[in-house]
Length: 329
Image 1 (cartoon, rainbow, N blue to C red):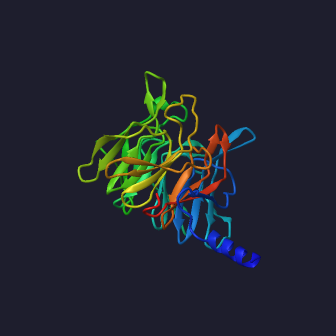
Image 2: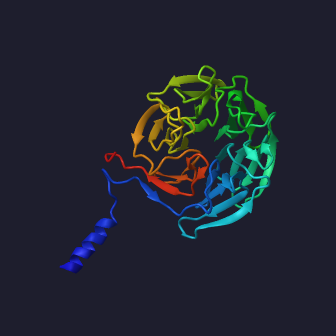
Image 3: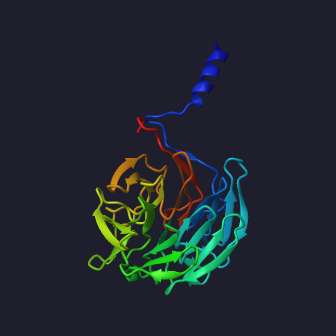
């Protein structure tokens, strides 16, 4: 009887659990706590590039490129080093490359646009922005890298820039768009529904003298090269992380609370639908996070890697989110 009971318990433990079961699981942590890093996937592996971390009461820009293959369970290993480092800039991945725009390097705010080869870790500068851009956002869509917002100043967020650059990924040509978009810090730029959907990070309020949370999404049409705006159904945190789940939806998580002026960090999550900007709450993160990186893997799974849980407090955690099948949400 005891053996039969044990066998039944093992079988039940191996079955997927729905309803009130946790959707977040803990994975092998990063080799170092970082925030503001870039991530991509390649041939079954996860690539993490750069980020910032604190040591001896000083902020450092990381130049390490890490690689891990979760299917083999071989942990994290150093793939290469990124000349100058990278943190808190725009980034986006495709099948073969991780594209890095602006951000900080070892010298300060950067104007470089770089292509990081995901197989070798080799980095190449492909374009130079007309001005440095820290805290910008980026996405790949229709054969181009689109770079949104950011600032030329590392500490004065009132200087957030309303710029939209397009970098052709084949020719590496760069142009600025006439209709620039939102002037924002840490915008979340998503390639959804054959459009750019921008949750405009923090936008500077001259009246309040601080960054305010977004109340609308900015949508850029490739056909007209113009922006439209749509009100959000609920206020969202500024500086949240996100990753596309499919052609129309993205998972959003974390950020600074839109209702707490003290800078409290959120653990809430949502699924955002680009077709109508509807927001569907999901199970919260295991702990609050800001400046984390999110990456959709496959089969309704998304990773959230690193980030901050408090000022100057980086973390190395890696969590995996699994979407519930239809009928179990």
